[in-house]
Image (cartoon, rainbow, N blue to C red; front, top):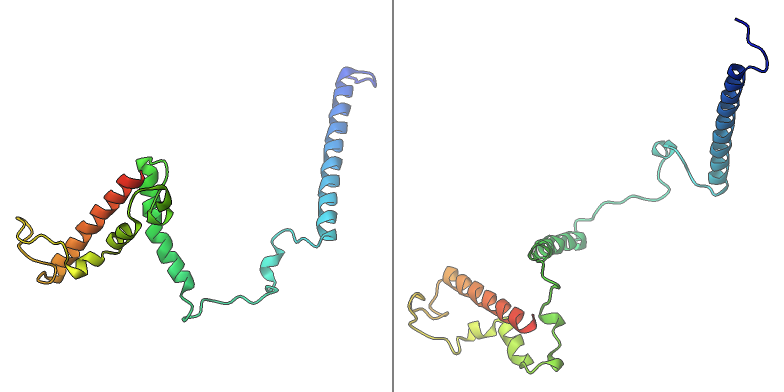
Length: 166
C-alpha cells in the first residue's frame, strides 16, 4: 500500500504531529517562564527548602508563658456554646456585657449584683424552710449543697437575662 503526499491519512498524521509538538512547546514555554519569574522574585519552588536550615530562630513555648494555654482553654470553653447556639438556631448570642441598659427600664445595679451572685454570700432575702431545700440557709449548707444552689441561681439568672434581652 502506497501513501501519497496529498493523502488524507498522511495529512491527519502530520496535523497530529504538529499539534503534539505545539502542545509540548507551549508547555515548555509556560514552565520556563514561570520558573524564570519565580527566580526573579526570589520565590522558592519545589521541596528543596526542606533540606535547608530556617532563616529564623524557631523557639518553643517557655514554661512561664501560659498565654497560649490560657487562650486554648478559653477557646475550648467558648466552642461548645457557639455550637449549641448554632444548633438551637438562635439568631444571635447575647450576654450581659452587650446589653444596653440606657435603652431599658431595668435597674442596671440590681442586675449586675444578681449576676455577680453577691446576694448568696450575704444570705439576704433568702426563704427558710422551703420544702425540698432541706431547711438550710447558705451558711448552714455543705459545700456540695452550696455549689448546687449556686448552679440553680446561675441558671435562673441566665434564663432571666435571656428573657429580658431576647
